[in-house]
Length: 460
Image (cartoon, rainbow, N blue to C red; front, side, top):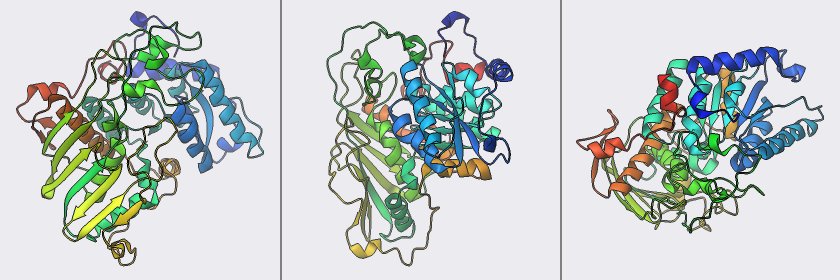
């Protein structure tokens, strides 16, 4: 994204595609002939080149061997250079000569190119909705890092756009491609623990810290554009991402850019709960919560300790708390099943998970985990990114499509609102509104700094 004057940067769905397509006509990509001939390989552009992109999303796409990265985009030129190196190495590792990899600091130019089929979006949460909506409008298929969107209103907008367009959108709820989570869902759906009555979800928390002082904006970083639809604030590395490495970024702890662990890791575990209990097209009816929040004026101001209880169909009670071991425990009238990830986190700078030494899959009786005789068998995926690319080819729904991701993300956001208001709330999963609570409904969206944001883009 170039450093344009914000007042003159007019964004519309029509202009997003039109202006970028002109650029594509005069500056064609140089890509391997195999990407043109049979059209069997998908030409991918990467938007966002931070920690998750370089450690997870890019390797996932490259290892699939179904796609070629042909372009990268970021607001930090150092990260762009590192992203190019990753793509070039992926070619040389296969014994191929690396093509010219196009680089962008303006996502609108990348998504408008006719010689790019799909994009991977690995940006901070506050950019998810605008980028994904613009890509969908430009006719691209999308892999979108979780959470689906920053706000509920954005989620409705993006879900509906995907449905209208017929594009393939996969959200990075990769637990659906992990053996233990799929097996847990199959066991529970098959009635192995009887009628599920209660679920406990454990998530870690992020600590706060005193604010860092204002710093000079690095010459390689377009901070004004990075803030996007959020309120303008002074630059300090603590607010964004490290310049020297790819350790955990500070934006994950600031509510302008992320709601905290309730959506950060919560989007994974809520999704697993919805999957196992077949709540993918619905949501809770009641929610009550509390949470500890630092001074909102602080940079690191996402929630600390918290406890949320949600009422779901079939009288299922879901309790989400930092006091539980990190994972999910399903209690039925015939036993319980526990499922979690191995290890403590994605990187050494991630929060420490409670119960990290617990097995990835366990039950009140080992016999409950016997895979024989299951009534339900869910789709098997060894790679979440490959599942997306296979869906791009087949035009069939991926494991974590937009409408499913919106529901799990909505439950996380509803939980966050309950934590903020600290009073019982009633939620209508059909209308997707709180009942008789204007204050709570107002929190389903937020203002956007023009001309950025999905709501601005949708109205243009």
